[in-house]
Length: 523
Image (tube, rainbow, N blue to C red; front, top):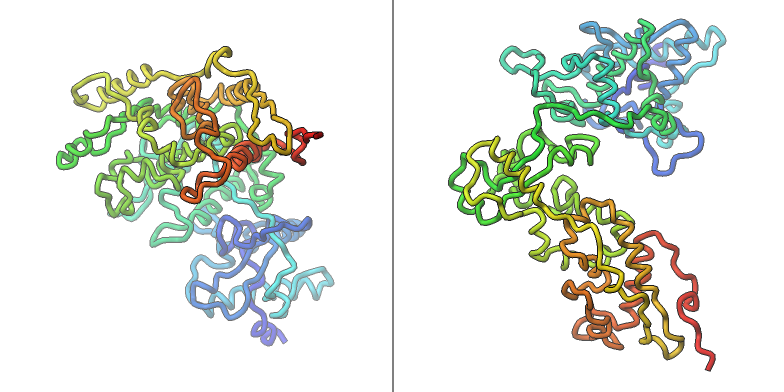
């Protein structure tokens, strides 16, 4: 009987404490999470490393098995072996040797456990193939990605008494072993990728081996620590309960406060002639650290300077992306410009910028706030001088924090172009301008890129020069759509696209009926 069951069943269980063979970020997730979904659903598909799967992967409830074992006074060692004083994430083995051995490990161990519980009259799991390998599993996952932001990192640093070597390590290729490189600490993801590569285990495996193992050992010592079950990290409600440090001290790694961004490394004279055509960019590194929860927001591969990988011509290490694209690529939040444009999607900015489009943002004046004229004619000679120059340039930067004075802003504007069917509209012009200005009064990005007090006016007067008295909309938009210029709507379309588009982008309730804005004529 047992041999028959062993032949017919396949993978039933995976790691009892850790995520088994699926990815860290929930390969079992569904697009719409049912109310009975759980964060501990693990997709067991380890056999894929030996070739195409013969049967559907198995959905396994990890925390449910952990609790069942705990009720029998058993722990992780019931399913996991230990190596080098750390528990392995693999089920009942240390290595994936070959297909038959791994398959038999699951069959023999899982079915034997289920069989023993069944004989004892206890509630247990399946032993038949079609009870485990199901195309559409009844288990839905609510697993959420989890990471270590600055707050959580700071709490760990304090708990570990600033002994960074307890988590951070590098790999010595010659000695073939890990070591601690003081002052060279970086995010774990710089080495540990989504999949295991050569001698580097995946981020999923590294996280669960190191983090959960540490939590387990702390629990054994009755030390307050982090979770060891899936839901403790991957459940949305549990994530909301993670304590947040209000003010996180700066993470020190000998990083500069200010940087002078250059288009070419100083030791590359062949590129310097081209590089010098644009003014260098003073960069407030310290301030930008506060805008992000991880250094990887900018330093996506290493903590090296951008121009070491992204040269003028591009390198293999930089994946062929040259420095100009690395800094200005609009579809990447890793670039300066891409990140800035992403901020423009926020509702306080989107009302204007949704209609402005790239035509305005590509103007030469958009370069000046970053590519500032240097305070010195000669290039700085060393890194310290560069930092000093960058700090001086940043201090000299002028921020525009206010719009035009009230007397220069008409209190209302009468729109009469649509008065064939409706009465003229009294647009509360000054009220709208003041509301828009109030929304961005605390935005440093707006303060530096709105070069003049009237810059904000271009949100509506989008193709006019900055002026206290921009031309009326009808100066450009005729009564009807111009067939020769289909991108320029007629006056009625222009008003509705502008006004209603702004409402939509800023999340303001739009009028339900025409008469909410336009009083209908009575004669």
